[in-house]
Length: 441
Image 1 (cartoon, rainbow, N blue to C red):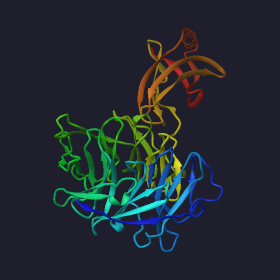
Image 2 (image 1 turned 90 degrees about the vertical axis):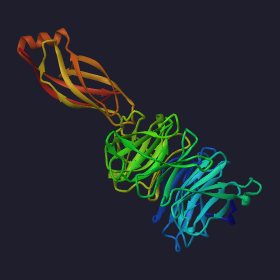
Image 3 (image 1 turned 90 degrees about the horizontal axis):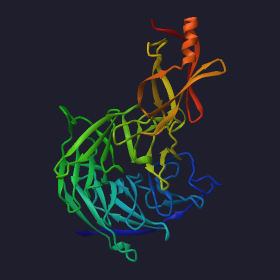
């Protein structure tokens, strides 16, 4: 165990330096000045959302923190000591509500006490390069990308924060970790920086690599990009070399995991976060955000920025439970695409049972969200038939709509009938198709 070398710095509070003048209270979209890059987001105490990043427009470049509050205008805190080593690894809420962030280039983990506006630089050994952070049982754990170790930081008391100490736990030779979470099994789970390996570490420093396989298809070759602890008790990983998300379910004996890899719509995945409805939310390399349920049901990804013109630079669950993202200098709440029913295929012939068959997809929304609507048959302005339809996002169902006696009589008399099929969700028409019905002989 060694004592950290602390440096106490009073941050400059510059409410108008990065945040435009007139920014209002409440958690809402925030556009910062040009040249600013948000690199991390995290929910803070008392309903706040925090952002950390680098001001590239400032010369020399410097790190900063921004506190977004539901009851006050945003506050900016600029770290004047970070001019030589700007860049944020990760940002988290600490054991006592303080905010912690890592600065890999400076080999330091920083603790910021917002009430006193005091920043404590906790210097590590040169070359350790702390990246990922997680709070667990009163301590803060940091992955060290520069060495095959993981750091356990025990913060000093609130009255003596400089009394923090650190213990480094040795991992397997050549291990270089990047991101870390605390699992529901009370173990630490982390990913390597440029491989598909996952490690599990107890809070007492017991290290174990986790072999991931699915059937005969090996996990080897995949590059993990982020890791998240889901509300479902499972561990999730995103994969930057393919459009997939992996789910790790720890075995009851604690020795291994059951691993399932799910293909998702969009491109290779980057950031992960738990979010609304116990789903896991992911960003992809194209700037889209989507979700996946514990059972592997997909929500439809949607562009987080207009036309997916900017990459996602951070993703997190906000204090109100919604998903927030950063894209360069913008911080915004993500809203999924609205629910919609879409026709995939419709038969023109009415079968002997008097049914019209069709395939319908439920699009948009969050994973597992219910599409509850109607299938309507119209003849001009006249409603001939309506049938309820229920599905979940991402599903495609084959359905048979029974036609009433009136429609069958019209068909029998003329041999064909022109109708308009309409799909309705929550009172809104989401798709329509004109159709000439015939009767199967």
